[in-house]
Structures are given as structure tokens and as C-alpha cells.
Length: 66
Image 1 (cartoon, helix red, strand yellow):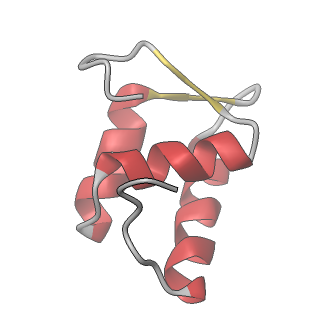
Image 2 (image 1 turned 180 degrees about the vertical axis):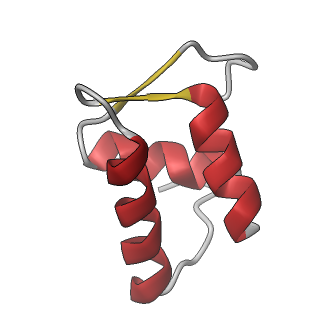
């Protein structure tokens, strides 16, 4: 995937865990996705990619990042 940040399997699993934990009805708020990215020090696009892979939609997007 273009401009994808290399992540370890452990990082990817941690992001998946956090995204699933923050999701309600297969949706996560944009603010939640941004907070996950910030807390892990990764680009927000990586959280978006993983959410997409998990079929979790990002809602109420604040910056059109997702």
C-alpha cells in the first residue's frame, strides 16, 4: 500500500486491539482514531488502514483524514 508505515506484528495487533476496544456498532469516532495514533506515535492513516481491514468505519471525521 502506498505511503504505508512499516509496523511490526506486535504494533499491528496493539492497534487492532485498541480500535476494536474503541468501536461501537462497527464504528469509531475520528477523535478516538486520532487519539490512538497519537498515543502510539504513528500516522493517523495507519489507524485508518487497520480500521478498514477490520471493517470498522470512522465516523464524525474532523479533518477528512479517513
